[in-house]
Length: 128
Image (cartoon, rainbow, N blue to C red; front, side):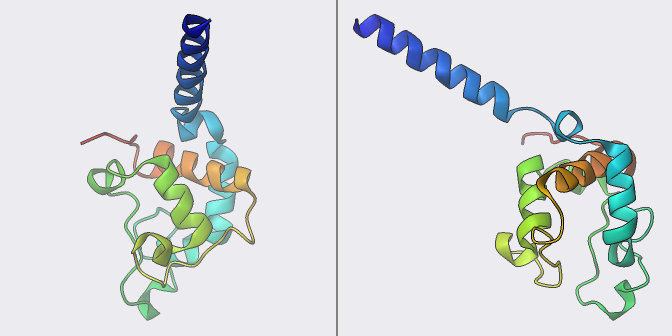
């Protein structure tokens, strides 16, 4: 009986970890993310995600350059999700990064992350 319980716990753990390792590209649609990014994020981050949007001149610190693969690849999809959803201050970053969780759906946020990963930084998370 114990062996069965341990086997089941092991299997459940494996399933949970395999589901949590799904990439943003698999959770989101980059094409839809591009549209959301252009309508929501580009004013600060710029059309190409370089941190040079029209509103960036008035911001201090300047918006993050999302095309910087060396930086973005050090951030998990979950970290990016939290920054977008809850704002920069939620993870110790700039409070100038607004929280979009009340405006964007969960799927919208995953779509934006997929777009950033696929088309802007062209990078995936790389564990240190």
